[in-house]
Length: 242
Image 1 (cartoon, one colour):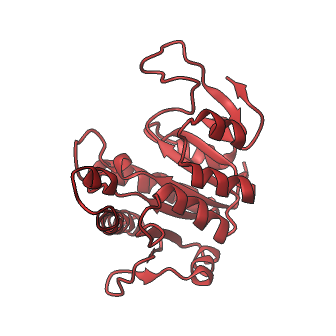
Image 2 (spheres, one colour):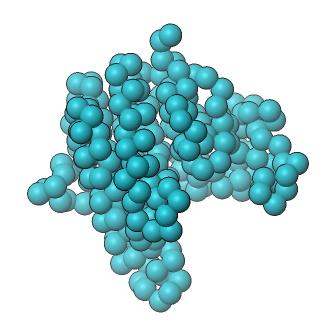
């Protein structure tokens, strides 16, 4: 079976790397993610990753505690680089060639973000991990994912979460909540469904980049999503419940 997509961007939250921990990085979770990415790359798919840093530091919470918001966001960007390097190590232990590119210069540990270089790495079968967000405070890593996806001509964004898609209500509080199979961008924005922040959704809408929201904790879901199987919710189509 041929993959549905040839070039994809995987958005990983920092929290996804924690597993059941309350803080930091769970090596077993990182290894499991790396194994799934390795399988996808082996099928010939070009894959880039944007990783968050909320498992280590979150600028918004720091700002709420009195820290300057811009300072907190820059610290959060550095946290994403720690996650990116951790994922790179797990991938390269599986013989998957990987490059970390950062929006803030850290020449001793990563390449600077250069669009053409990133695309060349992808063409050569290397996984490219984008760290340090967009390099600007007040922008989330969701927005970075949408921006990088547009820049590298990714066909789709995979938003890996801890839930199996987007619901019309919180499924924890409302057991009868219905999961959407597909959604359009306007509905996500109008209903404030918080799939990604509004800037990210608007970028995806403008550039016609679909978003697939699925459960990362289910083994094999990354490969299934790349193959085009029905996992999670697709943003970029009509509104349909499953």
